[in-house]
Amino acid sequence: DAGITQSPRHKVTETGTPVTLRCHQTENHRYMYWYRQDPGHGLRLIHYSYGVKDTDKGEVSDGYSVSRSKTEDFLLTLESATSSQTSVYFCAISETSGNYGYTFGSGTRLTVV
Amino acid sequence: QQQVKQSPQSLIVQKGGISIINCAYENTAFDYFPWYQQFPGKGPALLIAIRPDVSEKKEGRFTISFNKSAKQFSLHIMDSQPGDSATYFCAASFQTGANNLFFGTGTRLTVIP
Image 1 (cartoon, rainbow over the protein chains, first blue to last red):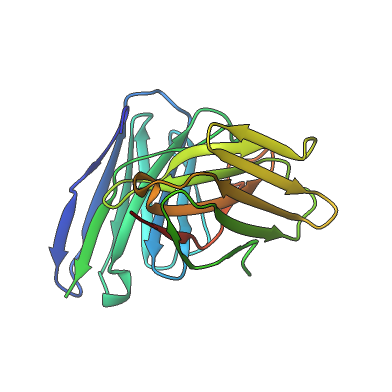
Image 2 (spheres, one colour; image 1 turned 90 degrees about the vertical axis):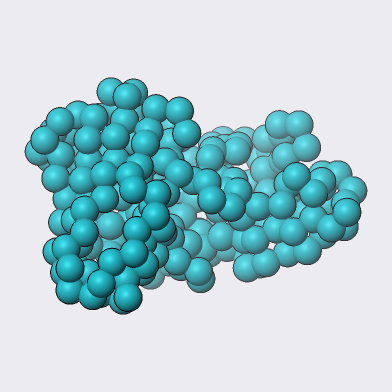
């Protein structure tokens, strides 16, 4: 997906370990979002950012933290991974708050064993 | 509480047929209704969107029908093709605010050759 890169693409980790997922954008968009996608639940917002060091919680933020020290990078951290956090995680970016379309990354498939 | 309700969860259509996916919302403050298309292993991508001041928008084989009084909108895919097989998400948003996009739970469409 042009302008937005997620890493890693796949990760398997053990319960109780910390995990950090990275979202990197080259579009200089102000707004960045982390979603998780699970069958039957669609896309659920975890955290979002409306500027450097400006972040807020979404619908399913428990067990997750985020940081944004630069416009281009938005990190999602699972402090102590649990099996319920096994999911596909998507980062999205948006230029304006008026939502004229989000651009999504290709996702990170995380498995917690 | 699910802000946007989507049905059906899955849909199988013969090649050349019409695929119809329905969504409903409650919040009358929503003023932008996009549809996203997601192929396996990829992030969702904006397909088509409509604002509530029009009742229909058509782009190629894809049409959004919007019923403001019923608070419902639907995606119609005419002459469905195997390449249309994907998961489709409807969404609704406000024009302002950083956390303003709400997704339906998705419909997995399979078009049989």
